[in-house]
Image (tube, rainbow, N blue to C red; front, side, top):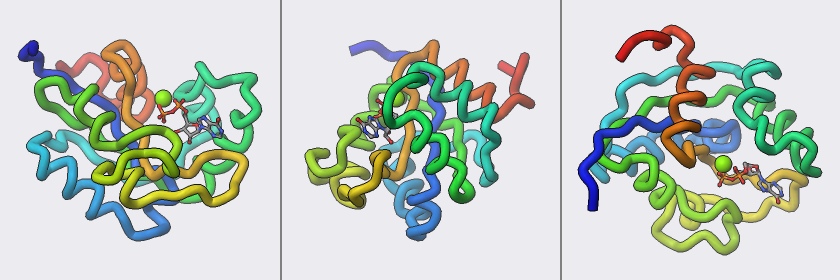
Length: 146
Ligand code: IDP
Ligand code: MG
C-alpha cells in the first residue's frame, strides 16, 4: 500500500452521455471518495483523439474508435485521490463489457452492442505517464499549473 496523491483523466464517452449516465458515473466516482477537480463537456477533435489513442494506431478498431468518439459530446474530468489511476480502472471494470465484473461501471451499465468498437462508457488513464499526457490533451489550459 502506498499513499500517493494522483490525478487521472476520466472520459465519459458519447454512449454514456447519450444514455443519460453522466450523473450515475460521477456519483460512483464521488461515492468512492475521489475528487472531481476539473470537468468539461465538449466535442472532441480528430487531432485530440489521434493523440489520445496513439497507442492503438494501426489496430482494426482504431478508425471505428475515432468515429465513435466523435459521434457526440463527451465529458472530460480530472479526478484526484490516492492511487486514483488504479482505483478508477477498478471502478470502470474490464474493457469488454460482457465480461466486466458486476459492480463496475462497465459491468453494470454497458453491454456488447455488436459494433466494431466496444462501447464501454468510460475511459481512465492506465499509468501516471498516460495521465499527465492525456490530461493536457483535454485540458491544455492546465499546462504549467501544478
Ligand atoms: P481501456 O479503455 O480499457 O483502457 P484499451 O485497450 O485502451 O482499453 O482500448 C481503448 C478503447 O478501444 C476501449 O475502451 C474500447 O472502446 C476500444 N477497444 C479496445 N479493444 C477493442 C477490441 O478488441 N475491439 C473493439 N474495440 C476495442
Ligand atoms: Mg486504455
